[in-house]
Image (cartoon, rainbow, N blue to C red; front, side):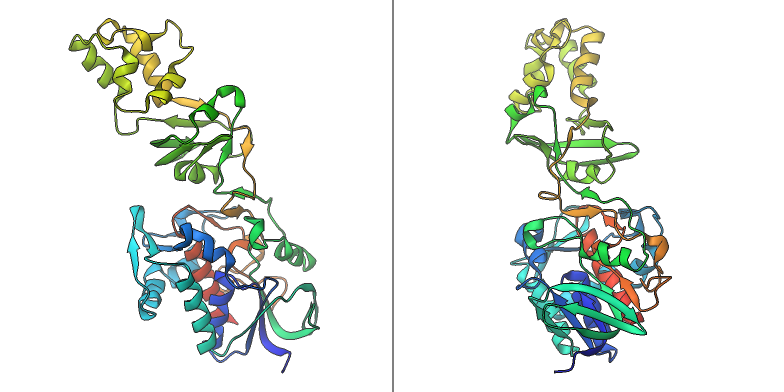
Length: 393
């Protein structure tokens, strides 16, 4: 078996397999190597096992990067509808959820099978259980592996990030990038739950979920909010975590579709003798209302709605709709869906994903400093960046 290739793709995840298949269809001899024994482990657990494989509305505006325009080119040249057409070609049933998110009807295994079928059809060889010892360059590339050296004209780093270490995530791609002089921006967990000060008592609300609007800086998202034993989670939290830095405030609106001022003023005007907390508990779980109102000056939650002052109403509104908290941290890479940061986009071509100072070296997917929102955007970046590199190999 020949161990000299046109291109070697290091990493058999979404981006790596798609890149290899794209290049293979163009007549390139491509080898994919992955240290795991099973291909696509992160794909298999994504989307609750159903793989949120793209988002209909994906544009460069849905990504976080030191260069917010870097992803524009690749995303424009391989669009969500392109991957949807591929899914339909493979007769994979799918459905759409909120905000343009597309999921397999049955199992994420269908997406892994699609990628492997595309690779097989393009003549791509995939080897698993191959550990990378290093990569050297002297005219061409030599990839040192646990199965012996491999030679290639080009190498693609598709190693992913540090998130979900149980799937075998490592910093290999970042180390190899630095080895060839590429910069790596600071790495932090992305799309990750927050931890909070135990003194806030949020652990007592564990299991409660509500629709909420969370804001951090200039970014805000309205999605589900879940209280956990250690803090807060749910889609709204994961979304804002991509824009949060230690010490920053997060603002929470627990009644995003209700004007609490109007609600309470209406109850007051109607002469309601029900406690204000009871009026609010018609819109939110009682335990949550009690927790948020405990300790407010003058205890306005215990007062009959008819007796509320304007100051009482403002205090109640702020407790529920302008609640500010400073997370103590995050749940880390163990619970993070992605890694924020990565290979500096200044060192890559946005057209081809090739390193500017090391011709023949490419980087795609999560290993690059491009992080998508929750909702299929990171898979679309995998397809788009993989396609860009695959067309250039």
